[in-house]
Amino acid sequence: MSEKCHSILPRSNGRLLAHIASVSIDLNHRQVIPEHYHPEDQLIFASRGVMIVSARQGIWVVPPLRAVWIPAGTPHSVEMCGQVSMRTLYFHPGMVRALPQRCFVMNISALLRELILHACELSTLTRRIALQRSLIDVMIAQLKTANAVPLQLPRPEDMRAARIVRSLLADPSANQTLDQLCKACGASKRTIQRIFLTETKMSFARWRQQLKLLHALQLLATGEKVTAAALEAGYNSPSAFISMFRKQLGTTPMAYFKERG
Image (cartoon, rainbow, N blue to C red):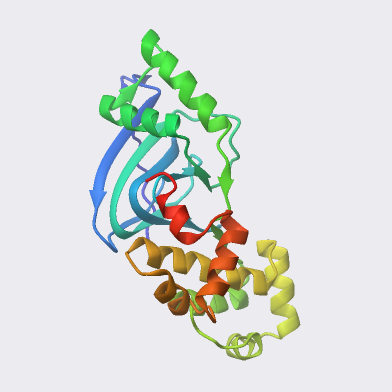
């Protein structure tokens, strides 16, 4: 898939006219925004629905009323799960220095949510206007204190491990053992375990658990019941899924989706 660079911040004769720009769009289930990148830092907020952001480094699942931070110059694509209302802010690079130079999903406070929606109504914000400068400063302060959410699935670069990843992404509920998967990819079990630990900072077992959790989260976003989502994602029982969900996200699946609804 070819990468395209899309600059969003308006300029005139090379002069920057705004420091933040916004885009608001409603998208359908399974609609995909092809791989591209921006010269600006990007905050994608899901006011409704779930988004799957894919980049070379991994996959990030963005539930309703959460957001994903995408640093400038990061090639990425976005897939929709359910009907999605996407609200995106583009920041002049370097404005939010406290955030890491990597993608991550964050919780959004009630105040930051209102600031994002207000910024989308204004279309652009500039520091040259006093009131807008104040809005920008409050927004950046809120972003600096935002809590990261463990909803990422890192990708290994090794070709053998990548083959296993592609197989499991195609069917997260597959029940093949690691031995069976290793035979198909042409590597030993010990080699694959070492690669996953080195390249994803997760054991293979932990990586597979995360895949199932994120897949179940996507299913819940499209209206599946907890039991159906758990079984379709490959959990042995709904209680096992709820236990893992609570361990990772600190609450039950039902409470998580109602938390800021």
